[in-house]
Length: 137
Image 1 (tube, rainbow, N blue to C red):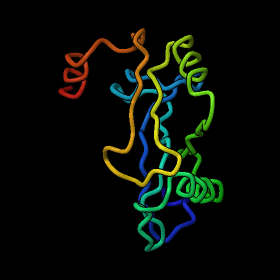
Image 2 (image 1 turned 180 degrees about the horizontal axis):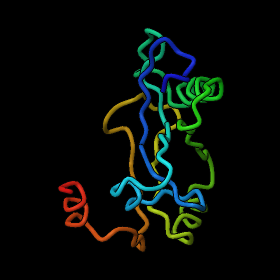
Image 3 (image 1 turned 180 degrees about the vertical axis):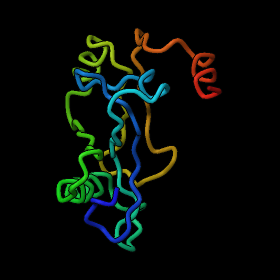
C-alpha cells in the first residue's frame, strides 16, 4: 500500500487471490496460492478527512483517483454499476461467481449500509470445516 498517493487513508475492501483467468478463488486465498490483491470498494478516511458522512458516489470518485494515481498493482478499484442490477446479478449467477454487494448511491458509510446478494448456485469452496482446517496448518 506504500504506492498510494495519500498521506493517510482507510480503504474498505477485500483481499482475494486470483486464478489464471483473473477470477477470485476462495481456496486460493486459504492456501495462499495465486496472485493476492486488494479490491478496494470504499474510502472511509483520506488525508485527515473523515468521509463517513460523505455520499457513496463521492467516496467512490475519491477512491478511484487515489488508486489511479497509485503505483501499487495489488490494489484494484472495485467497479460499480448504478443501473441494471438485475442483469448484473444474472450474469454473476451464470458465471458461478459468489454474488454482489449493494449500497445506496447517496448512502453514508456504516457497517450496516450494504446488502450482500449471494448467488444461490455458488459452489466454490467446501464449507467452514475446510476453512478452519486450512488455518490450522
